[in-house]
Length: 109
Image 1 (spheres, one colour):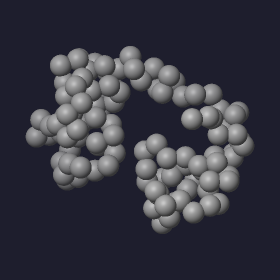
Image 2 (cartoon, rainbow, N blue to C red):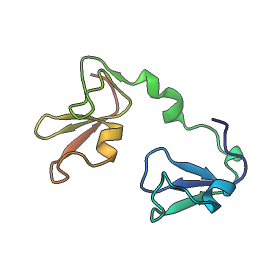
Image 3 (cartoon, rainbow, N blue to C red):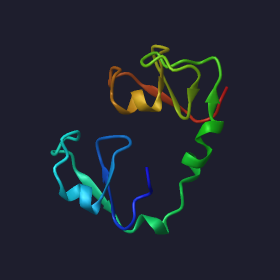
């Protein structure tokens, strides 16, 4: 996939969904049209985030996501008060009880 040139449109509900100007304006059968899109002006002026550039270094060895079962968890890990571990994608899509307190773990143990 090529980087987006010009304005970029980021979905505020989906973790990794972005559109260019042309795709934003056309019918998107694989994406909910009710989702709000945030316009980010000319994305070429922004550098790749420090987090994204270093995400692979954040490896939680011996810890698996209790939802998708990825092992080890790579990136930010969330530990629930009931001792359930979630990767950032599963935490983002609200699979686990939202009334449970979660600890955001940004460094491997």
